Every structure is written in structure tokens, then in C-alpha cells.
Amino acid sequence: MLRRTFLMLAAGVATLGVSAAAVSAQELPKLKQKDKYKVGFAQTESNNPWRIAQTESMKAEAAKLGYQLVYTDAAGSAAKQVADVNSMIAQGVDLIFLAPREEKPLIPAVMAAKKAGIPVILLDRNVDQSLAKAGKDYVTFIGSDFVEEGRRAAEALDKATNGTAKIIQLEGTTGSSPANDRRKGFEDYIKNKPGMKIIASQSGDFARDKGRQVAETLLQAHPDATAIYAHNDEMAIGAISALEAAGKKPGQDVQIVSIDGTRDALQAIIDGKMLATVECNPKFGPKAFETMARYAKGEQIEPWVVNTDRFFDKSNAKQLIADAY
Ligand code: GZL
Image (tube, rainbow, N blue to C red; front, side, top):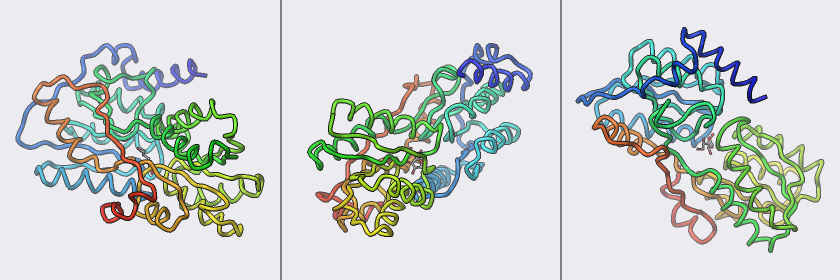
């Protein structure tokens, strides 16, 4: 499967007139130091508060610096996001910030920018590391440790249930690095917990209503579920609606753990409907443009600029909700 995918991707890159190997061998494009830049930001979609907060943060920082921002919204389509990046290349931007919706389909876009001599900084989501590398094909990946987020969610559920839970997992966007890694972090943790079992797992695409629909279906099939692990708060809020529609009490009959730290999630924690959520900070603007400035100065950028995440539960949700997005 992987070989076929790579050959398809290589063919994709080859249609750009170069072989994958030739592109990969090229130098990582540099960034000249200038007062003002024209910068691209290729967003995946705007279907949830996290995405909207990330976009607002990027736009605000670009405006503060007086940079021209070429912003695109792929409306949930990886193919459109590739086209969006290609249009930024055609517009001759100085650098591209890209949040690759899924790990593999955005490789041709990363390679096309490299071939065009435009540096790429990945924000929030990563690309498949067997197909592209930081420092060689793109400058760096700025984002959270999704595996650790998954582990911390599992640990919170373990503590709250004394290690006994029949878990429904609501997965994020299929093929996205947060979905892959949040699943890995959670499942690796419960491997050593015989009383914690995932009884069903399905993608809700990080969306509230899809999460509600999937939770509804899985709860009907598994009425014995005692916990829900959602890869993001939007799906967790959807699951709360599904539980209440089924006459169950979220936070009592079924414990819910999630990731992001949105305002609605903190409110659900305050209301006793959600156990905890691990932060995934969407406010990328300052760190994104600071990293760009470091790169322009010629600094060696670490392959992963790590965002640190807080943890929200009933001990701190009330005092922190005012700053939530
Ligand atoms: C994580 C980010 C995820 C959020 C979701 O860094 O990619 O995408 O956790 C969002 O809420 O849709």
C-alpha cells in the first residue's frame, strides 16, 4: 500500500516536470530578510472554533507586522488545499504556512513549493515523515505533541474510573496527523490497563454534528459503553447531545475525555458533563511569524517547534474559561 501510494505521489510530483528524487535532492529554499513579506496561509477548513481561532491568530499577527497575507480555505478538501498551495506559488509568495489536512495528499504541494524555491512551514498538522522531512523538504513543523495529548486523555480516564472503562472512541479526520497520533497515544496507554477496552472506534471528522451522529449510532450498538474518548471537543459536545437524547447522563452514566480546550468544552466540564480536555492551543500567529523571522535571519530551525498544552478539568475550568475560544 505504502509503495503504491509513494509511486502515485511520485507520479504526482513528476507531472510537475521533475522526479521526486530530484525535488528531494534540491536545497531547502532560503528566505531573504526584508521589511515586508507576502505570505500564504493554506487553511484546511473553517468548520469549528479551533480552526477559526487559528485563522484569526494568523491574520492578526500578519496585520500587526504589516505583511500581505494570501489566505485560502480548503473547505475540508485535501485536493483543494493542494490547488490552493499551487495558486500561492503562482502568486509568488515569499513563504507558505500550511496546515496539511491529511498526512499524504499534501506531499505534492510541499514538493511543488520547494521546487519553486518557496519555503514552507507546517502549522498544527504534519505530513507523512517517510515522504517528506523537516530541514530538507520544508523548514519545520510547529505544533502540539498529539501522541502525548492522547496519553494524557487516557490517563485522566484511568484515574477517574479506577482503570475500568468500556470506551467508544470518536476519531478525528481520517489520515490526519492529530487523528493518527491521538489514537496512538491513547491506545498505547490502555494497552497496559486490562480493565480499559475500546469497544468501538469511528471517525467523526473533528465535526460536532458528525460526532453526534457517530456517537448516537455507536451508543445504540454498545449500550454498555461507560466512556467516550473524542479526538476533539467539537465531537465531544456532539456526543453529549447524543447521550442526552438517549436518556443517559453525561459525566455520570458515561465519562467523556477530549482534546482542544474550547469554551464549550470548559463549560461542559463546569456543568459536570465532561471529565477533562487536554489543551491543543490554536493561537499559532506569534510563534509562526517568530519562526519565520528566525529562518530569515539564517538560524538553524529545529525540525519540530513544540507547542506546550495545558490540562483542563473541574479544578481549573471555571478560572480559565474567560480566555477560552
Ligand atoms: C489539532 C487540529 C485539530 C483540532 C481540531 O492540531 O489539527 O483540527 O484538534 C481541528 O479541533 O479541527
